[in-house]
Structures are given as C-alpha cells and as structure tokens.
Image (tube, rainbow, N blue to C red; front, side, top):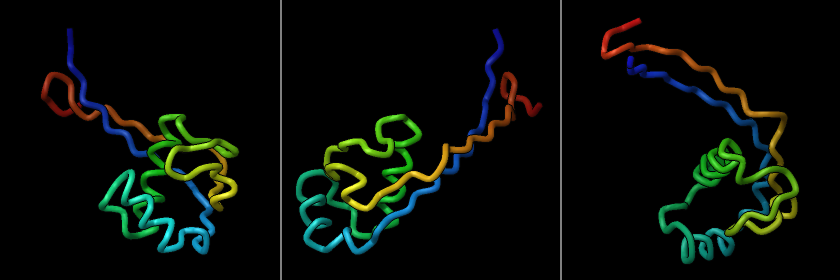
Length: 93
C-alpha cells in the first residue's frame, strides 16, 4: 500500500456587506462563538471553510450568523479546488 501526500488549494469567492458586521454583532459573536474574531477577514475565512465543507450555502441559516443573506453574505459561484500529489511513500513524485 502506498501513502500519498496531496496538497489542496481552494478558492471561495464571497461578497460581504461589511456594514452588517457591526461592532455589536462582532462582540456578540466573540462572546458566544470565537473570542479571537476581530476582523471581517476572519469571518470571511471562517465562512469560506464552512462553504467548502458544505455547511453554509446561499440562503442557509448558519449558527452565529443567522440567515446569511440577511447578514449580507453571498457565495459567488462554486468553490474552486486544485489538487496536486507531491509525495509517494515520502518521496517526491
């Protein structure tokens, strides 16, 4: 049995109405979900991860965000993923 190491690079496009990410919303999110989220870019990264794992799609209710369309979030198109096998049994391919 061979062991492969495969690298994945994914790209998710998200439109975010930043005016809906008020300090009050972000403070409440930090209180209940993740105390390290201070920048909208951190929310974008989190949303991209949720979208890649098919946890969040347009029109969904997402815990911490509510209805994402009402929160001003829209995923644009489908995520793109590029893969490349780089090692086989620890040796470069």
